[in-house]
Length: 114
Length: 114
Image (cartoon, rainbow over the protein chains, first blue to last red):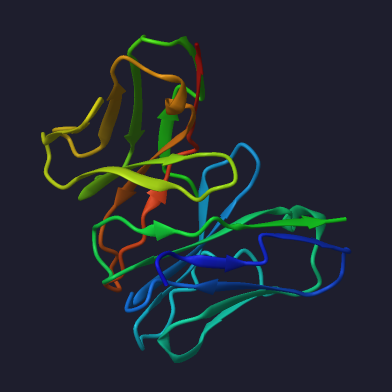
């Protein structure tokens, strides 16, 4: 597609439920990143995919968080047993190659855990 | 965790004024990036800096990569109402595993009064 597409744009879930957030990167982009943005905070790195390499999961805050990237394209971020502190905007970004350049971000998924 | 100190946190200015914001780090970065985020959207790349001492302009925006490689600033001249948003700096270096994962500042919220 023309840009990075994320869905849903908004998600309200009850504490304890699992949620899946989807990211559709720009076609042909090999690098994909997930970030979390809490109110008034910067962007917190979660996980990074590059081609067929093993993902860099060093930013995942707990084992309730996981992500997959199927076929080198679409990625799904899963949060199990959601907690109120998981409420944030989850941003996905992609780039053509992994390198010191800019990234194209999606508009994010605003997750609210009640 | 966050390694970048971005200041100021927020700015309230009159249309036509110049704006200056900066980021400092205790670590060296190889690349500095500046992004702008508008409400409900993901960050959009404004300027990328690749060499220490580099000064780059993009319209009314000017950014510099500090000589020490530990800081960068962004200036906006003759601000206009559409400059409103949150500005993020991001530092970039190659990790030991070969991945490039930028570290973001907490952002500077800019409000421009007409």
